[in-house]
Length: 355
Image 1 (cartoon, rainbow, N blue to C red):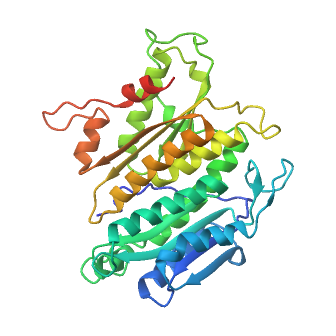
Image 2: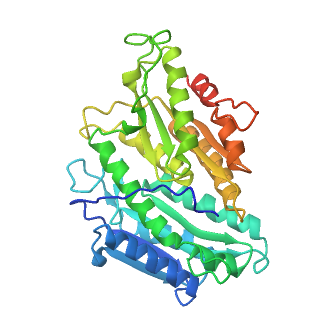
Image 3: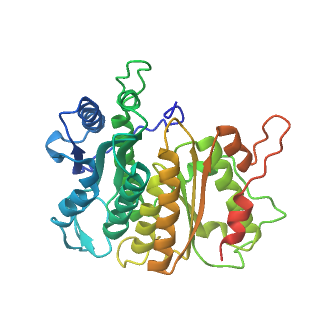
């Protein structure tokens, strides 16, 4: 099933009071209506005020990226370091703290399914990179209508789970990680029980560069092992452990947007004195093939986006996003043995690429 490895994350929004935009294509369709209701319910259950959720309905899912950008840009104003926004931005502030895009493409019912799906994924990532506003990709790419029903939790053959709830959690997670970054808070929980071997630890490090490791929350059994091996390798190569910080993205699709955000905001004065300009970013995630081409579209779009970010910012973005046909294949890349097959952790390769 495509949702069995979803992160078991409960977001407490506290006093953040975020404002969310949902751009949905054809709310009269039972799939889209159910997904949208699930997203709204997921956010209000977490404490988001219903009046702070703006839903914009359009007819054609192909138009979602264009309309999303239009609605975000319409609220643009010059950013202020002393603003009361939940998280700071480099150049502009926007009225929305996050966006959820909801629609469905069905293979066989639209011409050029693959190219149009890929185009939409790329365009949504481009919006995130340009605005630093997290946009959650809720455009389903299904083989048939029944798959869409399943992903809305109303399948006739297999009921499934309503992905709208996942997207709500993802949106709030992306807001929270940005808020935490502005407060100088990183994800230290991944280091519980972790220690750098004494034979590779270098006191103070020989390299004072700052590295941000971004880890997708989906498939954490795999991702966490790769993160830890990447850190070991960096320390072995002379990087100061105290200059390596880990931040959690809700999923692999969200990695480029978070990368661009931390690069930009790390260079803002007056945000947080504990945040230093980031010199390199390593993005780690694992995409495992389900019943649709969704994993491949995400994988390709993420690679393209990270290359763009490196070009735009001149900051190295190393991609450690796996695109695997099975969970066993992904485990091998995380150094986890499968049967008699020995796993080889790619974290050492990623760590050696940083420089």
